[in-house]
Image 1: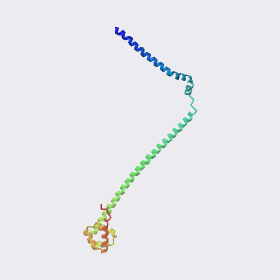
Image 2: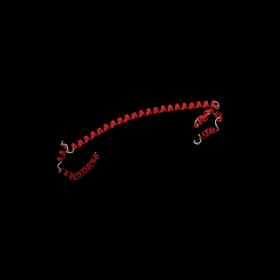
Image 3: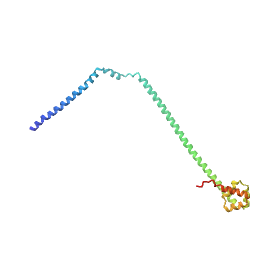
Length: 193
């Protein structure tokens, strides 16, 4: 029990020192704040409170409100214009897509038609070449004499060598030579690499 009594005065001394330090700290703060509090108390505080508490608008408030409403109307009008423009662009884009699809379809049909025409022409020329090869060389030579020289050279280029040789042998030498020159020169300008 003696120990408990001896510890008690120490605790009370420590507590007293702490309480004293708090009091001194509080006094220092009051001394620093006191001039500011005194200055604030000198100013009339009721006047600013009355101005902010009054319900009357400031003289610039109606003009400011009108400007905000005007701007809001402009923005609404602009938004409506942009929406209308977007719809117009969407319709135009759809029409362009449809026209592109129609154009691609027409292009494909044209390509198919040209391919048919090319195949038909090729088949006709091949058939005609075969007819000239089967004719008697002297009769075929008579036909080739009346043909355009470029056209005749095209047929000779497609014929079997033995058939073209027999027909050329029946052509006048000058014409046979001209056809030979054209046939030889056809690929002279072709790239070699």
